Amino acid sequence: MNLDDGVEVFSILGNEYSVKAPPGEQQALRQAFGMLERTLAQTKRSHPTLVGDRLLVLAALNLCQRQVELSQGHAQAMDQCKSRIDALVSRCSDTGN
Image (cartoon, rainbow, N blue to C red; front, side, top):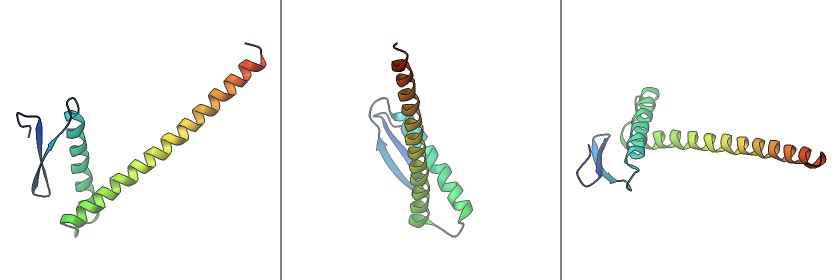
């Protein structure tokens, strides 16, 4: 739900949370909420006996694990790009260009 003052109201595990995003970041906030909802649903399917805080903590850990994996993948990709650029610069230097 979107209130007139830019505050978004989200329902998570039966509790409502009012969150105000900086101007221009409301869509990202809604996407983050959608991601949290999907992760909670996936976690609940995998661990049907978990409820409340335990479910929320496990879902948060799953999201954090994904973030760590993405960060590591990004760092590796950046290292590969840097190596390629260094090799190209070296080749250009060797040819006198």
